[in-house]
Image (cartoon, rainbow, N blue to C red; front, side, top):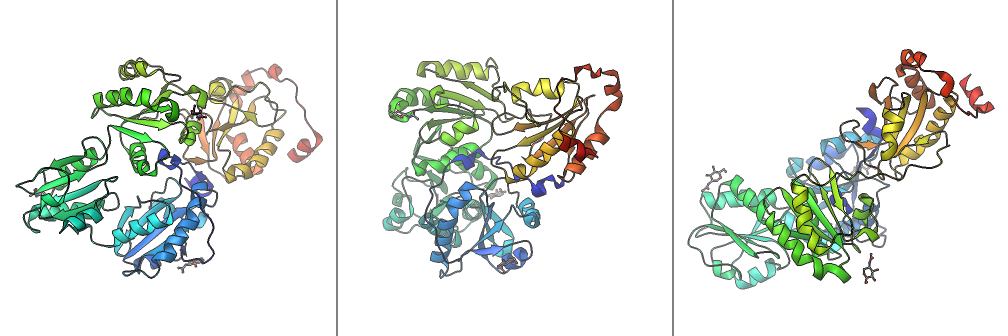
Length: 505
Ligand SMILES: *[C@@H]1O[C@H](CO)[C@@H](O)[C@H](O)[C@H]1NC(C)=O
Ligand SMILES: *[C@@H]1O[C@H](CO)[C@@H](O)[C@H](O)[C@H]1NC(C)=O
Ligand SMILES: *[C@@H]1O[C@H](CO)[C@@H](O)[C@H](O)[C@H]1NC(C)=O
């Protein structure tokens, strides 16, 4: 259990792949630094406080820091107070806080209201002006009254979703339900209420209480007369997902991209070069998307020039575009590279009929593998770990993870100390470049270390990351009886150097 304490968290959310712009550094610290010792105390004293959970090694956090600081400075004199704080969630002492707030990737920003009694996700922009504007709205009433056409014009941005409650009077159960939901969803959407439907430029006049959702895509306006809170929330959830989400460099699209990745079900993603191919692909792809609307699969079209992070994540190369990938809710992947526009409909149909073969990401099997710690890739995992009949200690790591870098020389020493033992293999697996098979291993953080004995019992190593403890663990858990029956003849060339022998003594 404790492994997370000093692990790098796996960035589980694809949403974090959406880049945020970098900016210049600031000097004065307006952002409060909190840690386990003063978090609860500080939060309980504020009716509204924003907390960023970050890790020092995280690139998106570094890009956010100066913007967040600028926003904190701009908001420092706001009435009522808007306080911005940060917690280094990578610090061992703050781990409980990270767990309590279910932090799964960095940065994660939470809005805490009412002394921390209400917690919402920050869904706003990541540059200073946007943060300021978003938070000012968050601290005001959950829904703004629209009394005039001017109010409507200043509140409703045609490029964003806006949800208006239209009522004959501002009281009654419909109005109360609407306001309660606006309060709950206020960090996701902007809400307004009015007595006069004519003030809203889109939609028909109404004779009953109505919730009108304005959006910058598809049918542009959609009404609901249902005021049951759960049903209304569902209506908003369904209506705010475009038939086809577009991911390009336009930041106005990025909230939908995040929503796409956070949404349920299977996700189809088509990546093309927009400057050459958008026109040829988008209409066809959108008609396929419309065909599957509400059937458990959502669709996104990405521009190869803006989605390099996703390309890396899926282990793809630009030459493979146009490429379509489906990632299922269970995490399985299916893909077709260099797909033509007129092949999309039949490929998606084949996928939904179970006729497409699963895609598994792997680096090539290394031709030379003569370092003490052996390199295992997805395509060699079966041979090295499951079918070798050896005792294998396998580290799952990420190249960017600091704790993994610290562990590397220790694993080297462990491997060297077993170099003359043909029944023990120390290996490492780059879990960013290779898919970890689901079911066998649970990799929640890096490094994660597993041990598979020669007879197949699999356990996770959760002890101290020292040479002595790891060696002791291997000696305790390896299967000696099975080894006794296997021949030692397969022991081939070993380069036992004097130092490693000495270490053993
Ligand atoms: C919380 O404690 C940390 C560590 O002692 C300190 O650096 C920070 O300034 C404190 N923050 C507040 C708001 O007291
Ligand atoms: C308001 O919401 C509650 C809870 O969902 C529901 O029981 C009630 O019927 C709703 N009122 C109206 C007028 O729809
Ligand atoms: C996309 O196409 C343009 C125009 O042909 C080209 O300049 C650009 O390099 C392409 N982008 C990628 C990532 O291939």
